[in-house]
Length: 207
Picture (cartoon, rainbow, N blue to C red):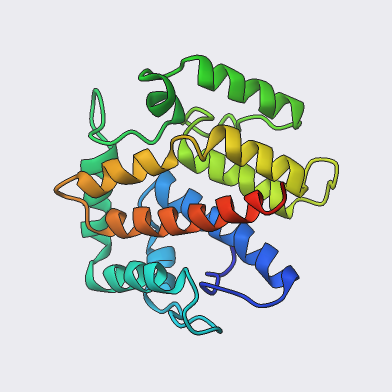
């Protein structure tokens, strides 16, 4: 991601670019605490949408506002408190946990089969399994932004979103919001909730 997206855009091309960038941003925020550079860019991001009353404007404003109020170390400490831990995290970021109650279960195996069909595979340098929300957001970003129209198209996006993100990601957002130490990531979760809602509505209109 080379820039932070505006909370809403106008043209169809801008909208697709913004969708891809938002998935990329969420992938970064869920995979690890934001880098100093990303946190700095969040703090100076534009918070007013081009059109008044845009649906993402308020959750985006809240996310940027919390980023401005917290320093980098506080955000990093919060990430560890929520998603770290030597044995089990307080909040899971893996789809299998929410879909089956266990890690590395059938939902992950199904996902790996889909990724193989799409010609995608987990980078060996990535420590998380493919059902980590950051990895799934990266797949969605690819399905929007890649040049291969046989793979990167609305049909593939809708199917992947419906099967591998939509069934559980709001439960994850609820778990984050319920954590007593969540502040920055509560804002991230609320932005995720709003963005996923827009995505679901958009895909429903294609049916």
